[in-house]
Image 1 (cartoon, helix red, strand yellow):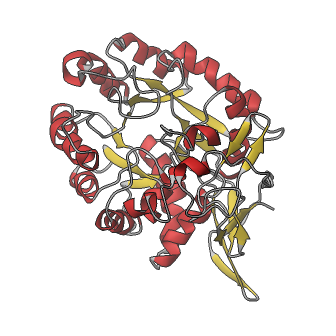
Image 2 (cartoon, rainbow, N blue to C red):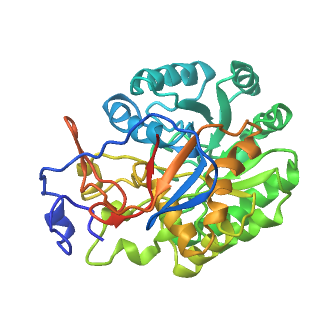
Length: 391
């Protein structure tokens, strides 16, 4: 699928990276409306009213990029678990409070979006920091990045059991979830096997050692992860699922030429894994919930000789999740996945406001243009349905 502001389908990567063409922005209304949670037919148009969702895995970045992307998330989601992998990373409660203030200042006027902050776990994180984070009332989880696993993870953990066990024990005591990027980074492990190996060598032993620690396996990508989450005690281990891992498989990286805007970490997997994830989330299981992993990068950083990992899905995520559930014949289970399972796991109240999804065709912008450059959204230039709106 075309991800560029041109008719450049099939161009070689080296040619694609030189294209800088004009593009149109897409604006969403920000007011809220109240309605019943039901599917309605108005004439020939279908409308689905659901409780306003949250995003339980979100990258908002900082600086100009934060200013550019936060309106998209704020227009659809009431809350978002904000990832801490900035430069430098958010490793302390004080840094998290400061970052939260930056996000609030960047919100559009009248927005009621609430950022839920996280800390970046390192080899030197102190258990006292977990106590401070809990008392702050603004930090809701701690993120585990194995060193070198993804964007800005170079400061991540190198020895979880040898250096972080006291912190993990304090997290269990404080009922603070550990959010896991579930991949090993050993060079001798194939990139498509890193999630399974992480489960077998790190995550399963961790759960056995600390069964009271709440763990979210972020952006699961394999049938192995689905099986593992389903085998764990409900309410203690859960998983977020992205739109890309529900809709794309690894062929999407190469169809018509190299597709840098379909590149993310964990990388897309085989079709058999995608199908397993779709089956899990559309089954009605409470163990799985929305986490877009929306990860914006300026276009030139994606279309380069060493492109960044990350897919920018925030503007279209709800439409894409609705597409998945409709195609599975499970629209009645969409609301629980996007609006109920996440807050229930975190022990937070469900939202009371509503959002409406209308089955109306719309074209995804080819890109979003800003003074610093362009951001290419997921499914750029494609036609989608289930457009979100508020009254």
